[in-house]
Image 1 (cartoon, helix red, strand yellow):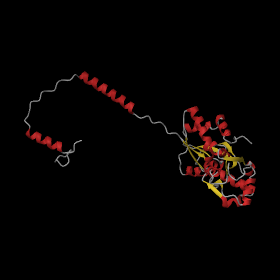
Image 2 (tube, helix red, strand yellow; image 1 turned 180 degrees about the horizontal axis):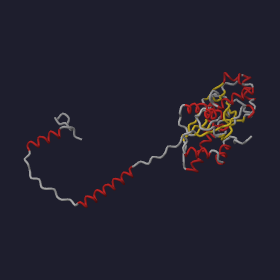
Image 3 (cartoon, helix red, strand yellow; image 1 turned 90 degrees about the vertical axis):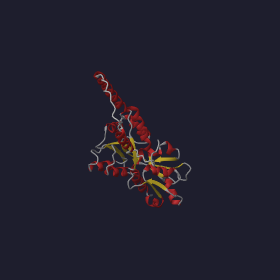
Length: 301
């Protein structure tokens, strides 16, 4: 594009000055009368043009799909959720987005207005508290029961057993360096790990060696990655391929800690897709997926 800067030409005012000069110097000319235009043709042209514009407008209008609902899910669900979402999408064609975290942290986010449409907690205590305070319209239902597991790297020094005898031996000999659990301040599996260790009489001796994960998924990473000699984590994570490939695990007796009743509830703003997913999670197909990932079903003893 040619630039006229510096030539005395202003692209905004220059044409006006030119026309004014032309008007002063011009000699009036005879202007022939306009040729008549068929009125019928004008109407057809207007109608055709309007129809074309309308069609183009419709074709150009973007189709805005509704965003997938966001649900809050406990970190213990990280691997099972992938299978649940795939099964739900195969059945309905709908998708759901998931925000994972410690149940206590997610509950706090909901109190501050986080736009979740379902909350799947690892501990029903958080759901009941939110319902009692009016954050949730109901206290929902139990969708699964969690289990606690001891895990250690396959090539590590910790002997893995259900009664934590290997852990007690390493503590007694002074050979234990670090041991991972989720933070009991806001993670249900961390609370249960503390209860199990207190039941076994190891809690106080473990204090200098504890490594706390922000949630149980992070604790699992610490336990098998070489950052710790082992840890107490969710059985659903210990059974998952990426974790199981790195360590040995054993279930902790359920009587050593309070139950891990994992409860879920819809929020007041839940849309139709979230409601459908909530119903799907109680379906026999979803319950079978939970079982395959190491969870017990709500009705199991």
